[in-house]
Image (tube, rainbow, N blue to C red):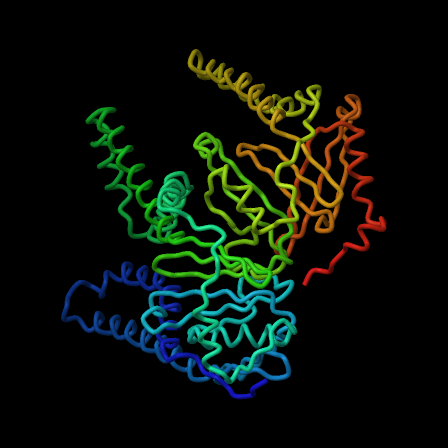
Length: 500
């Protein structure tokens, strides 16, 4: 391997400056607001010049720190490792063996695209408890990014290539791979329209309000609201509609930007996801890290014939929000089986479920009555007669429990377990037997009387794990599942493969 040391692109200095500035923007704006955007309001006062001078010094310091970080950053390849050196007063070195690297994730932001650059995040097996990737190269060329990948594959004996041949690297960059799935414009609009972006909008608004609580004139706003209420219910309803419509439009735009040209490709036993309009991201997921597959159908999308496919991934950083990755953010139910069959050909994607027995139905709603009885009683008493509407909770809970009971079930064959259940959305989970970390049978006093049990399975997901419950199944089915899971069977030992 070459011991030549490589530097980042100079635009890294600007990106580092913007990154730090973005993190400090709220404190700076708060300081501006508290100080009246320049002191006493007199443009000629010396205090305003001092305030602006402090702001200017802070900005210059941030820019200089970005330049220093770029100048002191080096990376190179030596002894089958990716080696990184950085730091001004304290020089730091990080050595990452290529055999431990699980994935290289790429991002093209608005500063990268004009120069043909990418940001590379390096994730190793197991990852760490922090939200940061193991290493991050802020801005390098696409050729350099592919050089890192080919050095890694060469170290893992998966690729033999002369890395000094630039033409070969250029061919690797420009090679088109066959797409497994690409989201259409119609599907993207449905995803945006039915996503939870409205909640994101209001939560972001709440965060903004909390940051500026000291300068927001709440009393004046309250007085204006009181005057506004006097205009009548119709005007209030219209205002609420406008606010909700604005939040919905905001969520549609945000989702469209995030998932624009969402495409999935499979290459070298890895799933490659690309998406994004302003910031194009390329996420790599090794197939060996995938522990489970979940098909989620919320009621609205279920009525429209759509679903979301999520994969549970072991290890890696949590930089991409969490360890549950949206493999297919939105897909027609008729396309799920052929699409997943291209990615996971070993799975049985059309299982015939063993359903939960009818005598277990009461366990899906009976516990809810414990809190509903005192709540409904208190509401009915203190808000009579309108409080009597709270009694509707009981038939609603009963119907909801029947809905859950009819959905729940499981399927099992020699090498995999499929579980179906419903909280509010219908969820179907595929798990390979060798990926299941633990299986537990849980039987309460009341379940024992009805001869039923619940089975809890756990798979590795991120740095912890994810549990799935098969609720209130036949006792004999629960014992059969435990017997199936016994790890000392000969066939299981032969098929057991360590996680890379």
